[in-house]
Image (cartoon, rainbow, N blue to C red; front, side):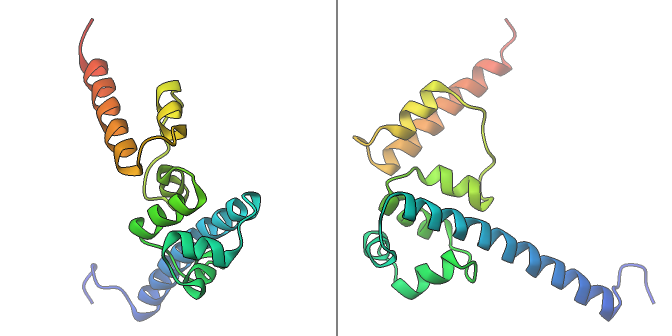
Length: 136
């Protein structure tokens, strides 16, 4: 047997570990979405309608049975009136970034669209990265 080939038992263990990681991530984001929905005093049906997803699908997300895509997370964030970035970080799609008053202000500003907010955050981050790489 060659060293790179896995035994059937090892492959099954690896597959089970991967499934477990996906299930854990799905339940974490689902629980977070549920807590945000309850805190906002929004019913499951109301959030599903606001987010443009079906009631059963949202219920499955909240119970950790489904892991939503980034697009669905953005729709749910809009329905909850929170930043999509918060949900992306919670779901493990984005890495958490250090706090910044400018970023916090952009995230909290409800007068701009989610797309505008993301574009401004990207521009801001690119300026910060550029300035950090320059010697003084």
